[in-house]
Image 1: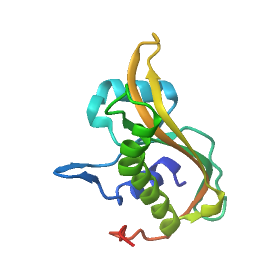
Image 2: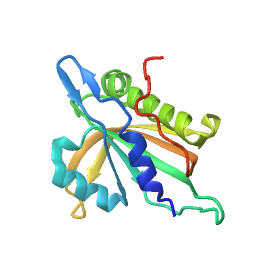
Image 3: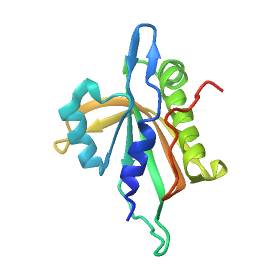
Length: 167
């Protein structure tokens, strides 16, 4: 049986790091509930970002062919570098330079390696998203893009070793 999280992880591994000047940051991937996300951020700290987080949900499997599908929710997170700044600043720095390129590359990977209808994608941009732990203490202030899409992976499909993200 195919596991949805494993299939997503293989595709995130194909994505290029985010590069700004001399700084290059690999794209991190993990999954779970919001409580698990808080634990992840508390343990990994600044090394968490940029992060693609898959929210746990139900999978569908076909009995006679290896496949797995899900109406998936992903949260792409990046820690706000200036949480005291308002939306125009957050949009210019975090979204234009980091989150939107990660989102575009993420969707491109799915378009090339899965059964995925790009017209079925719903996104939401959340600026200055406060991440709090169980005690309601502030853990991080992040900017995020939430993606919801129907995605299906089928067995027997060879993933490319590299993808050209520049076209």
